[in-house]
Amino acid sequence: MLLVVALSVTAQQQFKRNLESVDFVPKGQWMTGVSVSYSQTNLDNYQFLIAEELEGDVYSFKVTPTLLYAFKENMAVGGKFGYSRSRSNLDNASIKIDSETDYTAENMYMISQEYSAMGVYRYYFSIGRSKRFGMFGEAQLEVGLGQSKIREGVGRDVVGSFSDNLSLNLGLAPGVVMFLNNYSAIEVNVGVLGLSYNHTKQITNQVHIANYNSAGANFKINLFSISFGMLFYL
Image (cartoon, rainbow, N blue to C red; front, side, top):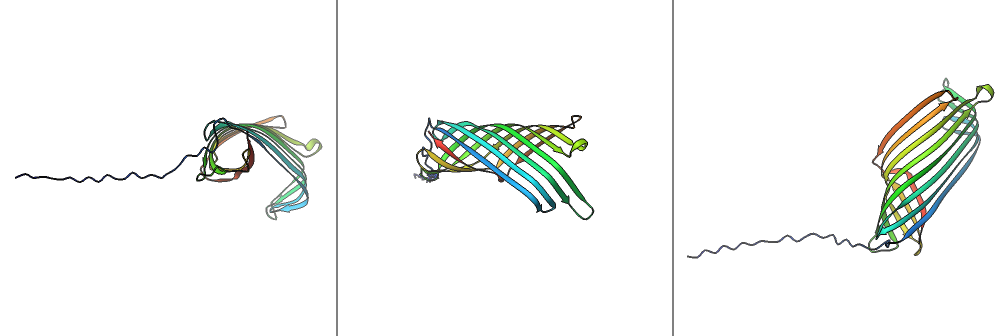
């Protein structure tokens, strides 16, 4: 008697997502642009929450040029360089927490400026097969150096502080890009992951010296880091 045993083997079909790669940014592409922001506010007996009788003026200015190079299809490296400056001149300010607790400041002058350099790596990918709309992931490493000065009072009652600041930041900022034509695009990105370190050395009245160090990690969407810009593709 001959016994035949038949084994049936069913091969599991491999799952495919059918993701296709599109050359959204070609190799050898240069990308450059600059963003500029400026704001100025004049206060005349202004009130905001617990702050009252605010009088003075405030302004801030920031410029950030960008230069990137696509060393491979959809991959680019480069840098962003920034300069920011802000000044606050308060002739009068009063903070009232309750009927027994208040603080009044007169002739307060604050000015600060910062230089920063950021190394950037980007990976682009298109939305579908579109070459007009796409997204990118951006890794950032930033070093910043800044100075600030605060002065309050008049005559012999003047109190002044001078500070030097060093900051290091490592972050991830994905974004969306939309091409207006072959040579220009609008982009928006937001920070979602970041590690930071700050060191500040402060000298008050040229006598008292203080140091301040802080470190932190952010693993959520930071709405304050949303940035809008325009790049030119050469």
